[in-house]
Length: 215
Image 1 (cartoon, rainbow, N blue to C red):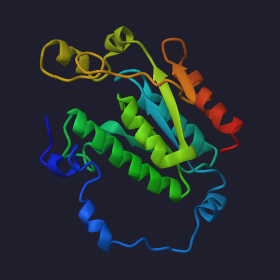
Image 2: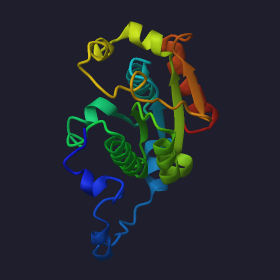
Image 3: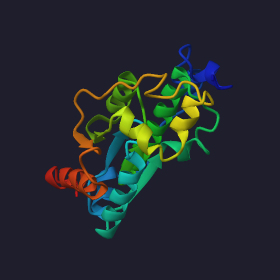
């Protein structure tokens, strides 16, 4: 399904409303990201969780957030379903709308990083090209976390009942079934949730943050 705004954010104008930029000027608020990070007591990064529906992205993100908060780190989750209830309510699931969905979330994450936060993005984000666009935009602040789980196991879990609806023909263009999911080639972190518990999965990401001296 194509959104009503696809003529602005689709292939014809992927960045949207470009003509307005000539009259928009960046204002320097004279407080640096480094100053905010010093106040927070940790580095600011984006942990971009990608994987099939049912792989465990949101579950691990939630438990990781709780662990980080207990350690007095400032963290926020941008969940794929949640942002579609507000910021991206006008978007569907066509390739063009998925691209715009990811672009918008990436831009919000970039703002949160500038604010000094650790941002956890939990988003299927099925296409390599779109994830790469976010990586280019965020640079070294982007940490890709591949929450790996096979389709059969995800469908067995079916925590939201979505696979059942797909098999009944109620949902079309569902990632992993009748729409593609392109596995990350070089993610910073891989979590195999068919082999690791939620607790162990959280520890893997937490350990990475410690190793890289982000926290």
